[in-house]
Image (cartoon, rainbow over all chains, first blue to last red; front, side, top):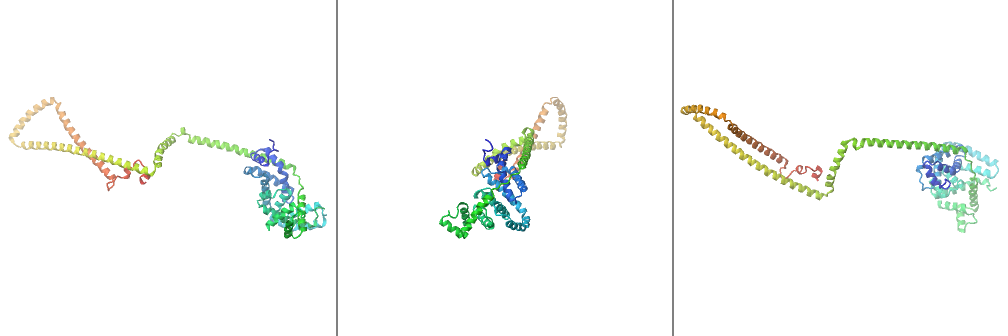
Length: 186
Length: 273
């Protein structure tokens, strides 16, 4: 049986036992998703996203024996990534607050100068995302970037399914009000 | 409100306003205020989906560095495992050296003794309290019988010793009387002259008798035997008295049997129980 035939869970169990091929299979399946998750979560900083992705895969090697094969690998992986981001946010809370004012000024400049196209909407959306708290941002990215189900998001973030839906509702409402100047469909 | 948000979110992600039922439309209007607000939220949802689809390329060197790190960790882990095996073997070797039976015969002896003693003690413990009591009563009765037999034996020996002592005393008193009669008769001059004659004749006879000396040691032997017997009877009576004293010391004042005597082979716990 080749590594492509195995489920994520089976590959992870093998990787935890030191199977290099299985670990490589896990990397090939999830490196892009994890890297993009960190990229979105960490202010679109590619270097930090790279470092965090590497660290996450090292955690898989170190804590692989803690993995419960019955649990969905994807949600377990994103829960680790989510916790890593939470820790980063905690340590950078002060720095973030200091930069908040400057970003608000820049946003106004964007609104005035850039055309209302998709690119502008993406930029504005990413900037809005950075204003969210860690939990809301993580839920948003997992939902819209990685298309995780509400249940999977709840498992990954450790939040109840109802709360996930509620947070998504408020995020959409806020975005629809703040991004009213843009016409994403144009 | 939380339930309403959840419901509206489900509706936004699945249906346009026109696709909603009348009841759902009324529900949305109650919570969002207008059809336009619902449409904006739906647009924002779709736009976010589209906007987030852009993927960043994973840096090419990331894979090699991750796999290199994996290899290093694996080597460390395997190294730790190897050392664990070495340590386990070393511990086993030391354990075998210390606890191996041939290496320490004293320990084996102790182990055997424990094994021998254990079953009897366990059997006593395992047998219920009722059987324990009956066993103790039986042993008390046996000890009583033993003591009675010993006492009767001792009293018989005592009476024998007393009788023998009396016989010895009678012999001694008879000899003393005979000797005192002889000393009184020695004062008379006629008797003294007769005694002198008789002495001279006796001396000559004594010399003759000396030649046939086989009789004299026999007499001495007889006398020695008597003395020895007397000494034996004395020592026996003393020993019986001391054993009696010892027994009476062990016995409690009320005439019962002391538990320490009966429970000799039993641990204290059983006696107390």
